[in-house]
View 1 (cartoon, rainbow, N blue to C red):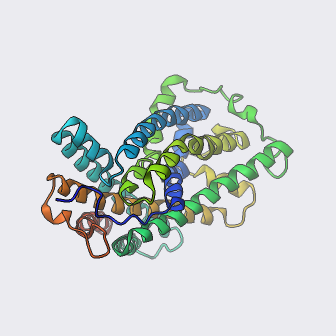
View 2 (view 1 turned 90 degrees about the vertical axis):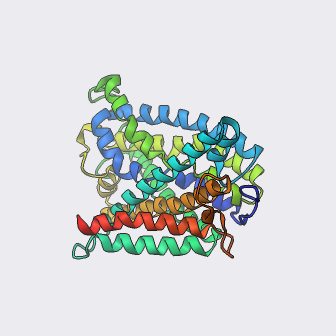
Amino acid sequence: MSQPGSDLSRRLRSRHIQLIAIGGTIGVGLFLGSARAIHNAGPALVLAYALGGIAIFFIMRALGELLTYRPVAGSFATYADEFCGPFAGFVTGWSYWFAWIATAMAELTAIGVYVRWWLPAVPQWLPALVALLALYGSNLLAVRMFGELEFWFALIKVVAIVALIVSGVVVIVFHVGDLGAGASFSNLWSHGGFLPYGVGGMLLTMQIVMFAYVGVELIGVTAGEAQDPKVVLPRATNGIILRILIFYIGALIVIMALVPWNELSPSVSPFVFVFEKLRVPAAAGLINLVVITAASSSCNSGLFSTGRMLWSLAQRGHGPRPFARLSPRQVPAAGIHASAAVMLVGVALNYVV
C-alpha cells in the first residue's frame, strides 16, 4: 500500500498556499458574526480575538513542525495515528470530516440566503445546489483548480478588509466625511469602558471568535499536494499571527474607532454599516458579494479537505477501501463524491424548510 500523500499531485504553488492560508483565517464569521459579538462584548471583542489568535498561533506552529517532519494530506489525523495510536487517528479523521460536512451545509444555506438578497423570487435551495455542483465539479478536475479558486476567493476578501482599514484610518486621522467628526480611537474605551460587560461578556463571545477561525488548519491538509512543502508550509504557518493582527484585530479596531460600539446594530454587518457611512456606492451589495464569496470559499475548502481526509483514512485502514483510490487526475474522487452526496442533505433541507 502506498504511503499517505505519495500519490497525490503536488501542483499547489507557493502563491496558492499563501492565499489559502490568508483565506482560511477570513470567513463569514468576521463579516457577519462580528456584529453580534460586538453587541455582546463591546471593544473587549478585540481582546477575545487576540486571545483566540494566540491559541491558534501556537497550535499552527506545532502543526507546522509536524508538516515539516512529514508533509502528508492526512495532516493531523495521520500524526495522531502515528504518535497517539490508531484509535486517535480514527477519531480525529472522522471528527474532522463530520465537522467540515456540517460547516459546508451551513455555508450552502448562507449562499442561498444571500443570493436571495438580490433575487428574492429564487427559492433558497437553488443557489445552494448550483454552488455545490459548481464546486464539486471543480474539485474533481484537478487540485490546481481548487488552488486557483481559493486564490481568487481569498483575494476578494483581502481587498474588502484592506479597503475598510485604509479608508477608516484616513477618516480617523484626517476627520473627513460623515464619520470624521466622531471618529477616534478613544471610542474604544469612552462608551462604558473597554470591558463594558466585564470579563464574562468577553468570554461569552469566544465561541463566535473560535468559529471565525475555522479553516486556518487547511494549510495542513494541503501538505500532500504542495510544491516544496518543507519551505512553503512553515512560511505560511509562521505568518498566521500577522494575518490575525491585520485582518481581525485591525479591522475591528478601525470599525469601533469609526463608530462607537453601542451604535452598531447586532443584526447588520458592521462592514456594511461602515461602508455605507463612507458613502461607498452599493455598499450593502458589495459586502453581500464578499459574504457569498466567503461562504463559497468555505464550501470549496470543505469539499477539498473532506475528500483528502477520507482518502487518508482509507489509506490507513480507517475507512472504506474505495476511498483509497485516486482518479486519473490524481484527486480522491470517491471521497469527493461521498462528501458532496452528504452535503446534498443541506440543500434538501433548504428545499423542505
